[in-house]
Structures are given as structure tokens and as C-alpha cells.
Length: 267
Ligand SMILES: C[SH](C)CC(=O)O
Image 1: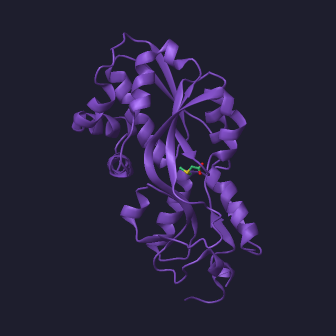
Image 2: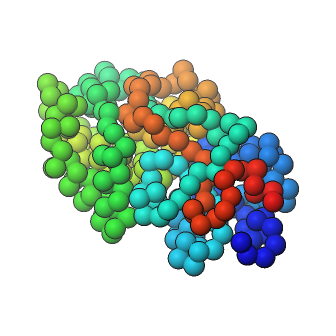
Image 3: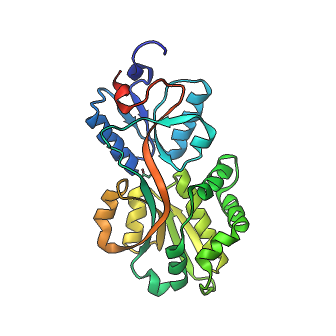
């Protein structure tokens, strides 16, 4: 498979995303734990990572990216997670909804909807794929909400409508969270809130809710990926529980690469 070692074919590079993402800390830990001599973790963004993946995949070139599930890339490309025998990337993750202290008193309807919010990977996937195929995130979210009123009703039934109260939801521009945040924002708009969506880096997102400058986030990857943020702020927010199960993070390569484990990156 090409000349030289896997490491040299990869130019000793793991293509990452934004620096504050938990997957980046986990990857730095993996470089250490697996003794990936000479490797560097390239910091960029979720969008830049998927652009690099598309370019490499097009030419069947070697690439290893910080990957996560759910994500549209698995529907678009033939990819695989590298085995992680040392368990650095942890087991299955869930995505949680986190509200600021005081939200239940100030905006009981929003609190109730956010507390009820729970959906499946396939639901998130529909919106992510529509956005990847060119739809504006707000349009893709509105379309999904319009087509899934039965699911939305499970979150909003019995919740009092409001008249223009302002809400701020914060998120990080990861494809999964662009989808979920636009979707729940649309649901809150539909019951009368004036919702602002604010895209921040991971630390800023957690800080905004913990300081009360934002109302909620639906982008908390737990128990492992965002453990640092959860521990830093645990007295300063309300964990409304899981909104999506069976998520996961790890190192992902195209299936055309004949490696199966993170350990093989040293070959
Ligand atoms: C990139 S995953 C959506 C979350 C994280 O790694 O912080």
C-alpha cells in the first residue's frame, strides 16, 4: 500500500478539528498512549476536517481524522473507526442537554421542552445530510420539524406557548450540533420564543451557560468527551439528561486503508 510507512504516507498527521473539542484532548492522549512517534494533531475546524477528508477520499489518499458518530460522513464515505485497544476514546457517549441555573423559573416552557427533548441518530442524520447536500441549516431544521410533528409533540404537548420571550442557545459548529441546535431552536420558536443561536468554541459554549449569559446547550458529550468542562462547572448548570444515545468518538480512516487499529499508525 504505497511507499514507505503508514506514518510517512500520512505525513505523520492526524487531521483534527477545533482545539477545544474533547476529541482533540483524547487524540493527544492517544498519541501519548500509543507512542505515535512524530505524529502531530492538526487543529482546524469540523468543516476543514471534512473538506480534507473529501479531498483525500476523492483521490484514495491516506488520511486519519478525528471522527464521531452520529455524522453524515459515514453515510457518504466508506469509513471505519480504528480499534482503540487502550480505550483512550472511551465507550459509548450520550449527548446531554444543559440548562443555566434559573431557566426553569425564568422560562418554564423552554425548560420543559428542553427537558423532554430526546431523539434518535437517524433523526439528527436526516438534518445533517440535508445540510451536507446544500440546505441552509435553519431550512433543513424547519423541514425536519414540519415533517416530524408527532415527535415534536412528545416534547411540546401540554407546554404553554409564550409571546416573544428571548432565548439564547449556544453550540459549537460541529455538524451534529449545527443540526440539533437549529432543530430545537425551531421548536422553541414554534411555541413563541425569539431564539438566538450562538456558535462558540467548546469552552466558550460551556462558560456561557455556566455564567448564565446563555440559556442552554444541547451539545454536551458525556461522560468522557466533555468531562473536563462538566467537572469545571458542575455546580453552575442543570443537566437535563440525554437527548441522543449511542454517540461515539475515535480516529477514523477510509476503508481503503489497510490498517485496523490505532497501533497500526506506528507501522
Ligand atoms: C467533536 S465531538 C461532536 C465533541 C467533542 O469532541 O468535544
